[in-house]
Amino acid sequence: MKILRLLIAFLAVAQVFTACEDDVVTNYALQEISAPTGVAANFAITQDDTGMVTITPVGEGASTFTIDFGVEGEAPQTINAGESVTYTYTEGEYLVRITATGATGLTSEFNQMINVSFTAPENLDFETTVSGLTAVVTPTADNA
Image 1 (spheres, rainbow, N blue to C red):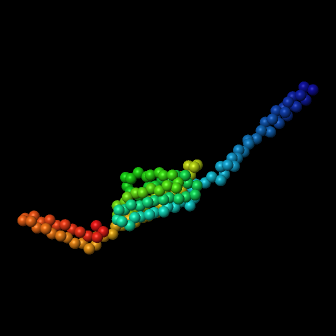
Image 2: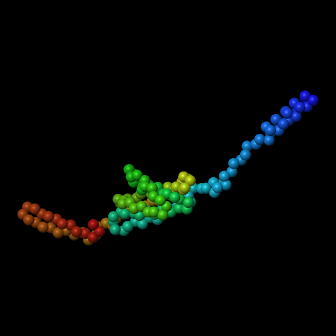
Image 3: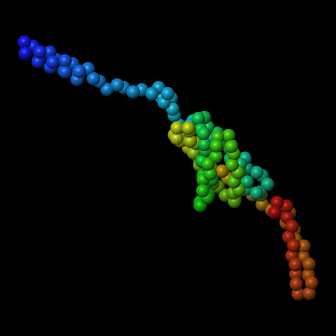
């Protein structure tokens, strides 16, 4: 009888240990999370030789955009989705990098080369005024 009780107790304890399994925790709300997609930008370069460029980034699922203007020593600027940023460049080619960040912190990047060029002066003319030993030269030109 004593052996039967010990055997039943042993089987009960064994049943408790074998019945415990790790539950698989699945959070279905996070399964569809991904980095922003379709990241691009609209670049509006003024044609008045000022070098002013307006950058409007877009992307599905992005909440902020960090724009690296491609100018050494210039800090990147972060803006919210739907906003634009304006930067004044000198003449040259620049690699603009845009990093889109979603609400979860996941990121996507978009790179674009831009070429900022100015129109060369045209119709160069000058006026000279001489007074004694002094000469004053006043240049004029279109697009200067």
